[in-house]
Length: 114
Image 1 (spheres, rainbow, N blue to C red):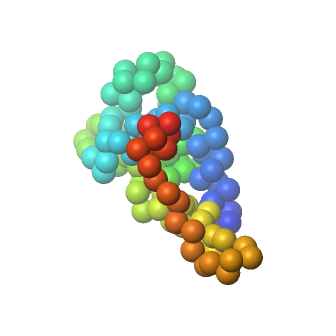
Image 2 (image 1 turned 60 degrees about the vertical axis):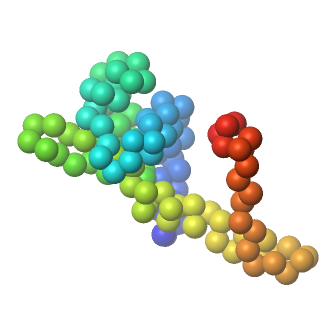
């Protein structure tokens, strides 16, 4: 992933509502949701939601598909993983231990607080 794409993806998620939308889409998986269902589920008014969907999906780790007259929004797990890889690539490589990989420790508590 190129730095410009990383900056664009991070900027797209840099708002509480857009981050909430993206997290909902991640939980839903590849089938995604139509905009109306997202708005209802998160209680975001239509015009505000449209603005945030454009920002979160168009520039971020999401995708838009159409089925007839319905527009579905979903998370792009591939782009999300590429973003995470970019951010953690070479983790700890400059540390004194010489370790080239420091995978994050995921515990039940860290999942709950996330």
